[in-house]
Image 1 (cartoon, rainbow, N blue to C red):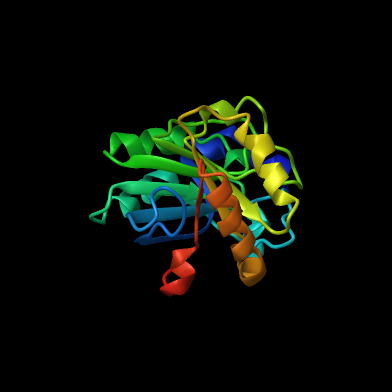
Image 2 (image 1 turned 90 degrees about the horizontal axis):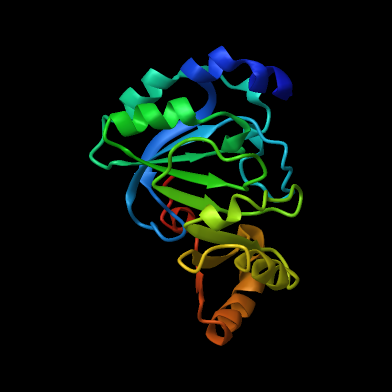
Length: 212
């Protein structure tokens, strides 16, 4: 993956970004679950989660670059006004130009990120989901509106508390079972939330109701 070439091409990120897919659906996870939202999934990621369900997004060179003005136009064609920028790892790119374009069009900007790269862009909602494979930058943690921890094994509860200590008191805290381990992890998550009610459970409802 020619990551450095992508990152260093300043003119490209001002006008276009590599996009794996974009679609209008409902937010399936976290605080805004169930709300109509337009998703823009940027291609490119080197965080390397072994259980990632969109590994086809990792290689940016396999996906076309789409003009920011086109992304904004297509996102504006729907009744919902939330646009979720996800990946891949979207913060591999400077998102200043994309978010400015979206906000100028009257859209709300949300991001889902591992926080492994510096924050760029202007956001109405920041969901941080840190990963063990590439640490989150500590300066981003206090800016998170939502902390989403993927629970793959029992050790992830300690991992969750380590990151909860880094966010603000207003940040929403979520524990979400890794899809393939949900039957095993869900009883543990339920018990943990009952004992630690500052946490809530996040489910990937889009997978249950069969929408993107």
